[in-house]
Length: 538
Image 1 (cartoon, rainbow, N blue to C red):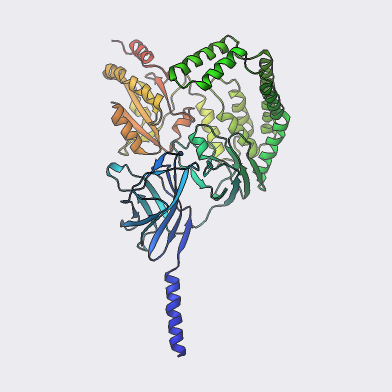
Image 2 (image 1 turned 45 degrees about the vertical axis):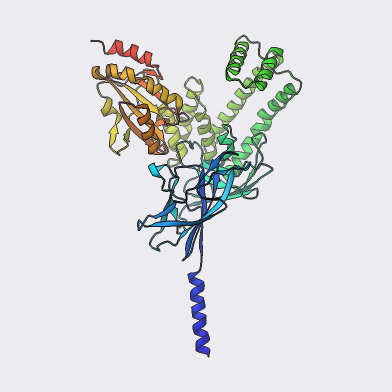
């Protein structure tokens, strides 16, 4: 009897072990072809694999998942069928509510134990379906030096159902970012990294609407606690981590001293109606009520003319604007003193942040270049902020009369090309563009007739597309029919845009002579033609 009970116990224990379910949070480690779909959890058992995720889009817009979807084993190459879905109807247009998201689960057949990771693929014709690569089926070993816990809450804002987390300076149009879901008004993420560097967090819905309020903090051992409200209300942030705490202290001090008094004064002028002149107020009211595009353009022209004539704003507001410039100048001087006297990662961050805001015509570029060279060169050598500042200082030489920056990049077939070799001894147009940048593509298209006229006379064009997906470049080249060599800058791997000083943009063009000297930056097609007439005339 005792042996029988023991045998039954062993059998039951075996069933319990075999039925165990492993749960992995944030399993996606590879690239994705869409921002509309995210998997946040995977459950693995002997009988099935269940992916839990969210669909995302604007309210009243729709997202669909195909019943043909499969998981592809990365180790075995096997395909695993989708069995069922909950929370959504497969092959159905799922319209988004005011929360911008819809949660769901997908159940797939059991996975071969040799497969440690899988790819999700809708298997639609023409590679038009969603693909999410590198879904890990094993708990990752955390070998990173730093664990930064980010957690918080969202107050009275259903649209904040998803947050974007990334290193500061990341361009989400071309680089991967971390998607953090908000459940019942709460969110959390365990960030594991090797280096202390600035990160930013903001709402995906705000980014989709074209204006967002990024929250900055350092990836360091400790906790970051946040309370988010909306674009219009300042978020609350607390931290027990030293770098973030010092950054918050500096910001509070400078806001109290410089910024908040200005904000109060501006609020007073707005409440008393002393910002715009009566003529400008009339145009603003018309603008609010008008939906016709031509009328809106006409109103913009009139408003611009009022500004040009100095008749858009009251004299009291003009005095306020002058005072604002003076206060901001004092703030910048105070910040510069901090950067110089506190050569820490916080000081380097403030310097880097200011550098990102500089423009070619900004007279303070020399100030920040000198601050970096005299205070920070040789410090924090392996920090990403140092790499950015080195590239930024070098990019300041990208100007008319300066020399182009050389680089090597692949074409769509993976063949590597070096820019200097392709343009040696020729007048060249370096065309930095992106499939998602309409103005860039219009500029490129305008250059095609110029290229066809002068390509046999010593003129060459080399294009580089800044993309998250190679397929986007391929489709754009096929549609626009560029007849010259086009290379691929995938996920900013070569930092080409930063090296040319246009890291925040879609692209720019640079006309260089046979010796590599920059003749023109962002010239029109006619300006290029004029230069070529001078340089390549028979």
